[in-house]
Length: 125
Image 1: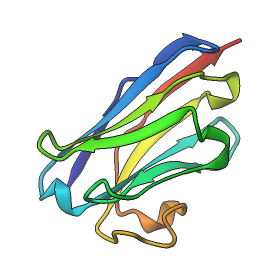
Image 2 (image 1 turned 30 degrees about the vertical axis):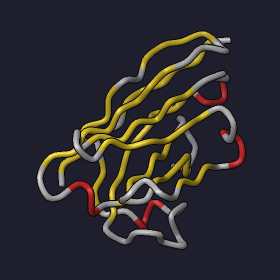
Image 3 (image 1 turned 90 degrees about the horizontal axis):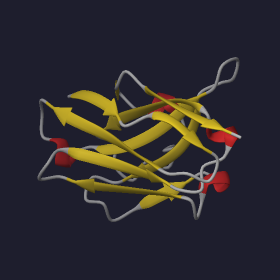
Image 4 (image 1 turned 180 degrees about the vertical axis):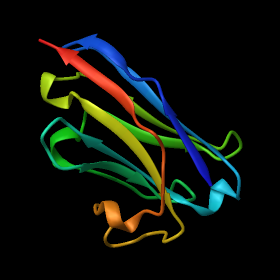
């Protein structure tokens, strides 16, 4: 499966962005999808994940209540709605996919087999 992340940009603190991860190739509805981010000089970190059927979502603690992950399998797309953005949310955001649904290691980058190219999110203070 090929993934294309989009929707990043420059926004002021408190603003919103919606990222999208469009998939092509194999049956997208069979894949769990995760979002990760990486700031300069830092390790890639987990942001959120959604199961193949959308029934299970998870978030890192620092984004809970501000970020919502969703998917539209008919459109082969996963979304990351980000509200109340903070400067510390600034990073390159990646989407990733795995067929290991409901994986207990959902927060590890190594749990995902396919990665998009990343989209930059910059939040100014």
